[in-house]
Each structure stands twice: as structure tokens, then as C-alpha cells.
Image (cartoon, rainbow over all chains, first blue to last red; front, side, top):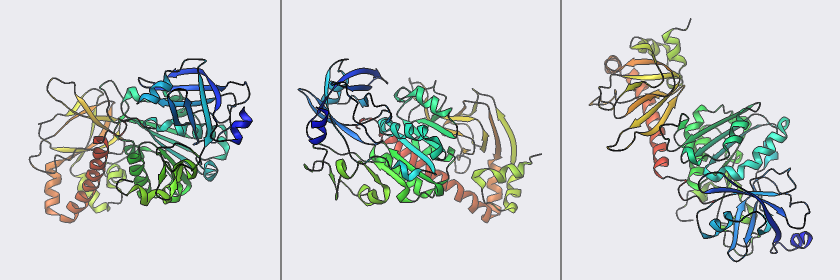
Length: 280
Length: 154
């Protein structure tokens, strides 16, 4: 079945839910394993899958797991509508169809020998997590790792234990901020761009990867540019309404690009003029 | 030993300022410390100074009736606290609450205003730096107002 699914990108491969972990009030991480007992599909950090919830529909979801883990595929999903709500309410053993992985992920090789600056907002940390695993797994290939993460409030912060673990890693700086802090929060309060002045950045020898709401990425890319990052060294993960995921249907067309096939990761150099257009 | 003038000159806010001006500023400066939990200033009080934060974390808070204080933002090492001293009516608009022990340089607002009036080149240097900070914070506030993580798409 896996072989057939690989030949036909429109055919989902059967997986089953191995585990569901609650990250916060409305965000869950699902671990899926192939129903046939074979290895899970390999993927590159930043790629996404189409997850088929039988009787409900299909959703594009970024892979949030570790690329070296070949037993399962991991997805972190925020429940915001009928389909995502149905997906996160799957129980252990329930079937989910998986198409993909699709798209061009984070160009990690471009950051080899250089500092890696990761800027995440909200659930945008999930598509960046595989890149962080990649950098930490091949630590000697990269320079410093700087992770700047913004969430809406302290209770919305994802992967808390991992953030703390990453912060203890050699040559790694992790800064977390929230837009709205409660009185018990002792961390940083302010939007994610306010973290730049506290980060140890060396723009000339760094590559930046950002994921989050589009307007956040616009502000982030602009600020990074002001700080001396070249546009071609800033990468953004874009999101549009992906349906076929292979560039046939046109649902995710964004200017001259198909987000599913040409992206979802693009350089800011390629995206800048589109990001500044109204109603695109 | 670190002199006040050197500390001011090395603070990011005054980066690149000529020594002649840092010397003028030093005449208005003093070293201050605040324990964690104390209020550095409160809304409505006279704004007679501003602070170059050397170490520690400060929360800017606002109160609304029948609500808990709302934390609008935090400031820490290398940032500046307060610009109400710069413009009439010279009253603080927010509370500043030390979340951690804070070490800072306080610059006397009246003293600095007088020096800026007497020396417009110094005034221009100070205003340029405050305008930049105001622009950055306005930008951040706009982004914060959009509540960008509310719809949760991804």
C-alpha cells in the first residue's frame, strides 16, 4: 500500500493514531504510525502532509516531528474548526489517511556553517520544530542556534519542556515572549519582534527561518532586514488553502506560485512584493 | 572602576554619542537600584526622570477598574524606561513594576530638559534616540493590537 501511495500522490496511505498529547487548551500533537507496520514516510523539515479524516475531509498539516524518527509521523494541530476539531479528537487506534509529504521545506543546508535564527509565532513553532531537531542532531554542521518564540499568552506556549531543554544546549539561545502576560508570568511580554534586541545576532553570518501568522512574518522579515539580514537569507513558511497538494488544482496559488508545490517555504526575496500586496 | 560617564556611553541607548554630550548627561545622572516587587513609578505621579536599565526586568502595567493590572510589556537590560519626562504634563502614564532586582542609571528629567534647551545639538541627539524608541514601540503595539495568534490557523 505504501508503494502504491508513493506512485499516486492523490492516494492516502493508511496510518493509525498511536498517541495524542494535549499541548494546551486547544492544541494537540498526534503521533501517527503506518497501519501496515512498515516505516513511516520520510520527510524534510518544513514539509507538510494532507491528513484525511474519513467522513470529514482532508487537511494540510505541517509535520512537527523529528526527521530521524522513522516509526511515525507527528503533527501538532490547533483545533479551530470542524475538521481540525475532528482530527484532534481521534483516539488511539483510529485510522487517518496520509498523503505526502509535500512541498519544499526549510533549506537547512544553506545554513550549514552559519548561525541559525529561528523566529516562531504561535503554532508556527510546530513546522519549525523539525528544523530545530535537524540542527541539534547535526550540531557541528551549524553555528549558533537562536530561537525566538512568541505566543499569545503564557498558557498558549507550546513545547514548554522542549524549549527549556533546548535552552540548555550548547551554543543555543532560546527567548520566549507572550503578547499578554498574566501577573504571575515572569518572562518577557511583548510581540516576538521585541526579542531581537535581546538576541545575540550576527546577520552577516546567519540564516533566518520564520513561521507564524503572515503579518507576523512580514514584521519579522522587515525587522531582520533592518538589522542587516539579506533578504535571500530569510525564509518564510507560507500558508494558503491547499487541496490537491501537487500543484494541479490551483487553490493555493499565490501570485505566480503554488504554495503546495513551490513552497510552503520561500525566501523573503521572492515573497516580499507579494506580502505587501492588498487582498492577495 | 566604572564611572557613570562610561556606563552611559556604553549603554545601547546612547551608542555613538560623542563624549562631549555624555559628559553633559553625566551631570544629570545617578546610580539607582530597585528591589524585585517594588514600583519604580506609578501612573499619575510626576515624571521627573528616565532610566537606562543596566540589569533586571521591569513590567509596564496599567490598571482598569474592577480588573487585575494588565501587563503591557516588559523592559530589560539595555533598554530605557520612561519618556513622560520629555513632554508636558510630565506625568507617568503607566506603572513600572520591578519584576527582578533592577540596576539602572536615572537621568534627572528637569536637569536634562534644561541642558537640551541650552544646547540644541544635545537636544537633537536625545530626541533622535527617543523618536527611534517610540517608533519601535508603536510598531510593536500595533502588532500586539492585531492579536495575530487569535484565529489559530496553521
